[in-house]
Amino acid sequence: MMSRRLEVGMARILGIGGYVPDKVMTNDDWAAIVDTTDEWITTRTGIKERRFAAEDESTLDLCVHAAERALADAGLAATDVGEIIVATDTPEVYMPDTASFLQHRLGCDTVPAYDLGGSGCAGFVQALDIARSRIAFADRKVLVIGVELISRLISWQERETCVLFGDGAGAVVLGSGAGQAELLDVVAGTDGSKTDILTLVAGGTRMPFTIETARSGAHQHLEMNGREVFKQAVHRMSGGVDDVLSRIGRTIDDVALVIPHQANKRIIDAVAKKAGIELDRVFVNVQSFGNTGSASVPLGLWQAREANRIAEGDLVVLTAFGAGFHWAAAALQF
Ligand SMILES: CC(C)(COP(=O)(O)OP(=O)(O)OC[C@H]1O[C@@H](n2cnc3c(N)ncnc32)[C@H](O)[C@@H]1OP(=O)(O)O)[C@@H](O)C(=O)NCCC(=O)NCCS
Image (cartoon, rainbow, N blue to C red; front, side, top):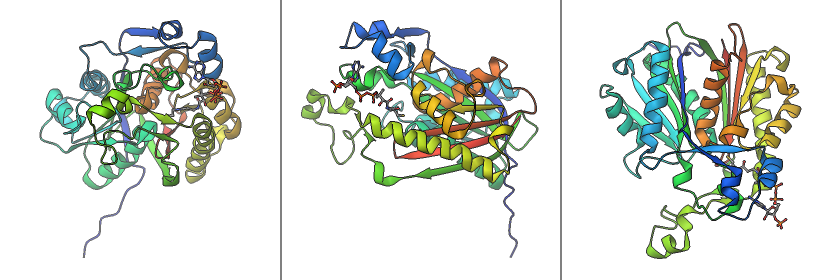
């Protein structure tokens, strides 16, 4: 029987794009709505402002902007895309998935398109892992998007969570041809014993939507044990950096830039310290965008590249964590 060898490492990033809405929501804007202050938000999270989608924008619109930029960056047309993966916890509609809408709106052919939902902020990096195996087995160009429109689905009354998030989208096109960066490896893991530290329960079979859940605001209530999430985030994101580097036989000294999930500046500082890297080699935009969920890492990658923080020859490490409790890290050789 013929067997097909899996060529790990053959996936390359062909194009990168990102999009954030124009509307800026500052900490002072939040202080006019909930019992908080710019000082509290800044010292606890490093966030100064975030972007919120306009009323007539939906998750799909954010995806389209980021995808079109990534395709243009790759010099590709929508019809060149062979598969679409959208990582999001804030989809266009409950069913079908956002990827189906995106496939049609972009004008891709009838290629497979699916969402990675519920994977929290680790979704985009997890999707890179799936994409590279699709490229290895099916040799197609895969459009991977991380997108969130959190401002419309989260409670605007709960100060513990509402001030943390922002809206945005980031996209990459991956394929086996010549590209900007080689995806050297990806590591990913899940600790399913920690589903309770970050969860939105209402809407599933455990708590279906009813008038009562809507009245109580349960459908917008993000249950979060902030301190536990903080600890796990530091442990898993720094561990992801170590693991992916050891798999490719490199050390932290070889890394030009780490792009971590942007949840909290204090988490980023602690990850940098644990991973043994100075902050000038760590990309940070949490002050401007807040936590954009699964969009945060591709947005960081896009911004870092646009700001010339990445040069040819650079080894770049992406690392993320999210509800699940999931984590994933990827090494890119530019
Ligand atoms: C949420 C987080 C910023 C809170 O910071 P913290 O230093 O752990 O703060 P604590 O939980 O100890 O809360 C301290 C106090 O601030 C209050 N507080 C919470 N949110 C507040 C806000 N927006 N404004 C003012 N006070 C607030 C709390 O009620 C608490 O009050 P108390 O001491 O009277 O009980 C921090 O835990 C964190 O970032 N965790 C990770 C969360 C995360 O990344 N989530 C997304 C994952 S993708």
